[in-house]
Image 1 (cartoon, rainbow, N blue to C red):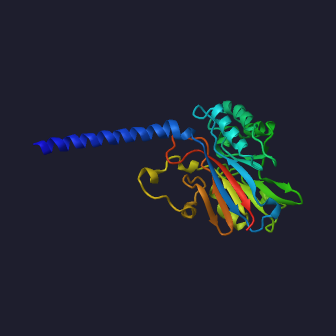
Image 2: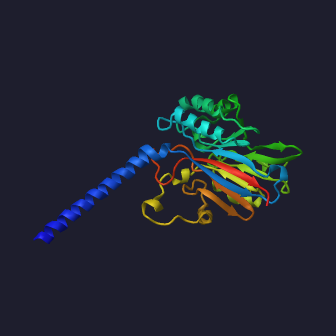
Image 3: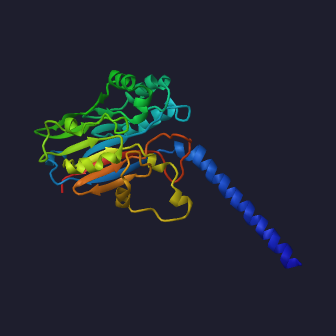
Length: 289
């Protein structure tokens, strides 16, 4: 009898602990993790990088999704943190808003506070186009941010240079990689901004050195972590990048000589939740092999 009572007590206690753990996980996913920006430092080795650019640091922000779930104050905090890191260049890889034009001006104004020695550059994402791409682009430009729409710019340092190209979003079928790379050559260092990482195969065929993307939010919820399973190796995600709207790719991967980095983003969509996948500010340091 005592054993039965003890067993019931133990089961109830275990159930309460599990409910408590579940509640804590939900609380973290909804209230804590979406607001806990993480700075990720990653070194990118490029064999043909000019020596003058060795140690050149690029800050990447992506998928801000300014909305009731990510305020101007929170975006400002990310901007301040980025400026504290003193990058040489800042790139923004799309999706600044989610569904309403009322957030465009405020988001662009706050992002206009970003500072970098060699400028701040941006591309548009699918949500920007679905809301009002022209309005978003104009607002960014008004606040001193250069939007690369199937075009490129030469980043110069002393007597050397690298190319920074940007393409329009794949999902709205406005991207033109050939136009974005026009005037550049494979023997030169070329970095491509593409909101959607689905461009990786075309970029690899074109000989691009580095692709910087967003779009996926890293999945927002790391289900493998929830299930207590090991993380996939980064390159394993490449085998699954067949559809432009693939939702799970994050971090660094490589296809041939082309490297890819997918930022987890700052904001959220569908549900304002993150678990095991905190918002990210990326610092990419270019090095010559």
